[in-house]
Length: 226
Image 1 (cartoon, rainbow, N blue to C red):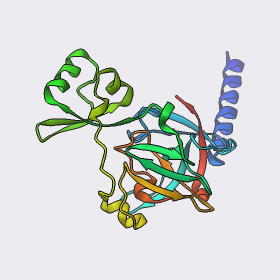
Image 2: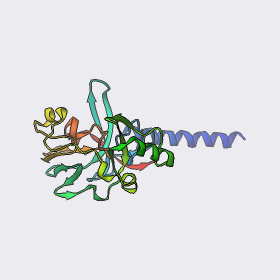
Image 3: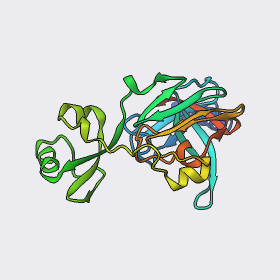
Image 4: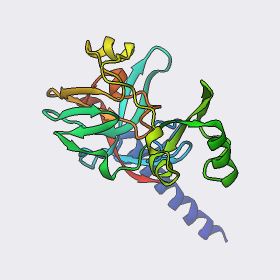
C-alpha cells in the first residue's frame, strides 16, 4: 500500500509544480469573476482560464492590470473591441468597429424601463428572477435585461438609451468630449492602446470611463470559461 501512495504523492507534487509554474508565468492561470460587468458573456462568480500564449483579437475577453485608489493594482477582465488604428463609435447603444456593427450577433444586456406591472409579470413567469439588477424610478422599473429576453417579451423599444450630446461627466472628463455610454466617439485607437468594454453595457466600468488601456498591461486572453 505504501508504494502506490508514494507514487500518488509524487504525481500530485509534479502536477502542483507544473500548475504553479504556469500560473507564475501567466502561461495558464485561473481567475474568479467578482463582477457582473461581462454578463452574459462571463457570469458572476464563475471561473476562467487565461493564457498569455494565445494572441488576442477583437472580440476576445482579455485580462489586464489596472490600478486605482480603492483596490490598488489588480486584474480586470473585459472584451477587447479596439486595437491600434481601429475606430470605435457607439451610436444609440450599438457599437461600431471600423464602421461595422459589431453588436449585431452579440448577446448583450442593457437597462430597460418597464412598467411595474410588466416587471411583476416577468417575475411570475420566471422570465427574470428576484435577484435581477433593477431600481424603481418615476413609476417604472429600471431593469437590466438580456436583449434577447427583452425582444421575446416585446420590450425592445423600452431600452434606456442616453440621448446624443447629453454628456456623462466622467466620460467628458476622460475624453474632453460630450459623449456618454450610449453615444461615444468616433475614436481612433492610438498605437500602444486598446479599447475594452463589458457585455453588460449599462453596468460596466470600462474604457468609456477609465480610458484606453495600455496594450502592455494585457496579461492574457481568456481561453476557457469554467
